[in-house]
Each structure stands twice: as structure tokens, then as C-alpha cells.
Figure 1 (cartoon, rainbow, N blue to C red):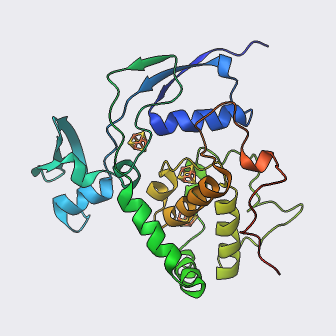
Figure 2 (figure 1 turned 90 degrees about the horizontal axis):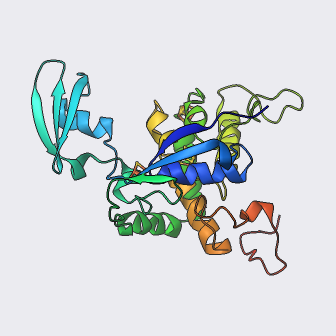
Length: 257
Ligand code: SF4
Ligand code: SF4
Ligand code: SF4
């Protein structure tokens, strides 16, 4: 049966996700028509609410963009105008792919990529910390997890019909919310993103517990780039590092048991 062709609007991060899904045989390229949109970034609703009402008790009901600023109105009819750059999501603040890399037609002018120095410096600081301290940070973050799976559901890479976290035959991990099961789930979810995560931030935005998920996936992105010179969602041709093997692959990350 011939599949219908579907139109998809794609910002830079969406385009990278589409590249990954085509490579993983989830979308036939010929069945989609990609309408690319150059992107100036998305607003972080949490940051905006903190500006508007400090307590996040009031809903923002409208937002209007005007040359570099955002006019917000809350349910009490209070209005506030904020600089867009002050309320961008963290991923958008340092986005390197503001223009889609794959499209059939591009809408609007291309825009500049953003500065990434702050995020790079932050990760370098984290890497300098002793192993115990990093592990403690992971445990602290994991201990907040209620295992709602919103991060997984929001992730464009998580399309398995049955997630390893819920499989019973075989059963990989327990389904409880005790810390060891949660850590297994998080480690599995994060490692399944190796060479695939496109730093779209959807998991972070979906998490109701405000868990710092990005530090772990971003570290993985950095390691895959450094060890294998690979970034996800950039090229339709280049094989992902976990789908290929070279005898001179770097393997400093493998430690003795
Ligand atoms: S990460 Fe943000 S700035 Fe970059 S393309 Fe996606 S939405 Fe736009
Ligand atoms: S940032 Fe999160 S949602 Fe986006 S691809 Fe990576 S793991 Fe998935
Ligand atoms: S969205 Fe947050 S709380 Fe829910 S499973 Fe993911 S990390 Fe845990």
C-alpha cells in the first residue's frame, strides 16, 4: 500500500530529529514534505511565570511576540513585557542549529546560531568534579523521579512499542519507584540516547519534577562528539557510532571491572 505524503513543519531541532528517525527507518523520506522554519527559540513557560508572578500560581493566558520582546498576560489580566532572550528555554539559549538542516522548502530568512560557551563551560565544570560527587548529583536528581515516563513520552527518539522499563519478558528492571529501580530506568533511558539525542529539551520540559535531565544527556552528546566525531541528526549518510565499528575507535571510556 502506498503511504500518503505528510507535511511536517520543522525547526532546527525538529529537522535533526527527523534525520535520526529517517536513519532509524521510522520515517520514509519520500513520504514526508518538510517545511523548514528558521527559529529564534522557544519561551520557557516556567521562566516566564517566574517573571510574571514569582510563585507560578497564576496561568499565563496569552503571549505576543514583538520585535525582540514578549508581551504576556496572566489570568488576572496583568500584563508584562519581557525581553525574549531572558525567558528562552535553556536549550534554545545555546542552540547551534537554529536553521533546519533538512527541508523541502524553507520559510523565512536564516537566523544566526546562538552562543554555546556557557553550556560548554558548565559541563566542563561538572566533569572536573570527583566521580563520587557526580554520582551523588545523579542520585539526588534520580531520587526526585516519580517514574511518570513523561520524559520518555516526550522524546522523539523513544518510539519503542514496548519500553525496556516496562518489559516483563524478559524483565530488565523492576517497575517500582524505589531508588535502585529508578536509577536503572534513568541510566537505561539516558544511555539509549547515546549518539541519538539532539538536545531538543523536550524531556526536560515534560518532567513535572524539575529534574536536571539535560546535564546527563548533554554530557553524552559531548562524549560522543569527542570520542567518535559524531553529532546526531546532522547527516543522513553518516552511520551512527553505535551502528558501526572501526578498529581504531577510541575506547578510553572503557574501564577495568
Ligand atoms: S533548540 Fe530551540 S532555538 Fe534551536 S531549533 Fe529548537 S526550538 Fe529553535
Ligand atoms: S533532549 Fe531529551 S527529548 Fe530531546 S532527544 Fe534528547 S533525550 Fe530525547
Ligand atoms: S518525566 Fe521526570 S519524573 Fe517523570 S519519569 Fe521522567 S525524570 Fe522521572
